Image (tube, rainbow, N blue to C red; front, side, top):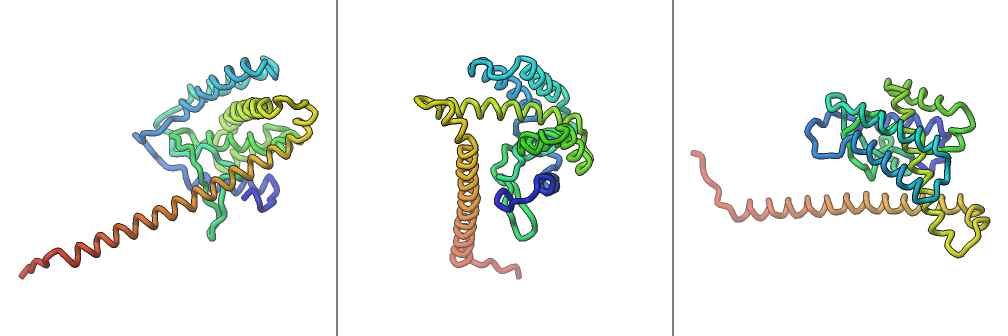
Length: 234
C-alpha cells in the first residue's frame, strides 16, 4: 500500500477495513495480551527517555505512560480479539481482492490497539489538523471507542519517537547533528524500503515453503496409495 501514493485518509479507511478481517475471538490463545503490550510500552517509554538524556518534557512522557497504563487496566479477556498488532501501510500488501496484512505481532487485545498504530503513522498530516480528529474518524469507521484509540496512539507515538531518537544517535557517532537531521527523511525512507523488502521476501518465502510442504504431503499420500494393500469390504 505504501507505494500506491494514496491520500492519508483513504489509506486509513482501507487499513481499518483490512484490520477488521483479522479481528476474531481468540479466547485461550497462547499469545501476549493487550495488557502485556501496554505495560511494555509504559516501561520502554520511561526507560528510553531516561537513557536518551530526557529528549522531551517529563509531562509528555508522563502523559504517554498514563495512557499506556489505562489501556493495560482496561484489558478485558471477554472482549479481546485476535489483532495484528502493527497495522500500517508498509504491512499491507495488495492482492486481487484488496489488501492483506503481513508481519503480525499477534496479540489478543481490544481492537482499538490496532488502530492506535494509525495515529503513530503519518505524523505531518496528524499535526496539520486537530490530532484527536483522526481517532474519531477511525472510531466512526469501525464502531470502536475513540478515547481508547487515542490513548493507544499516544503511547505508540511516543514510543516510536524515542526509538527514532535512539536510531539517530547511533548514526550520529562522529558526525555533526546538522548532517544527520538534514538526512533524517532519507533515513526514514531507506529503513521503510528495507522493511518492505524484508516483508515481501518473508511472505514469498512462507508461500514457497507451504507449497513444498504440500508437495511432500501429496507425494507421501501417493506412495501410500501405491504400496498399501487394498482391503475389500465385500
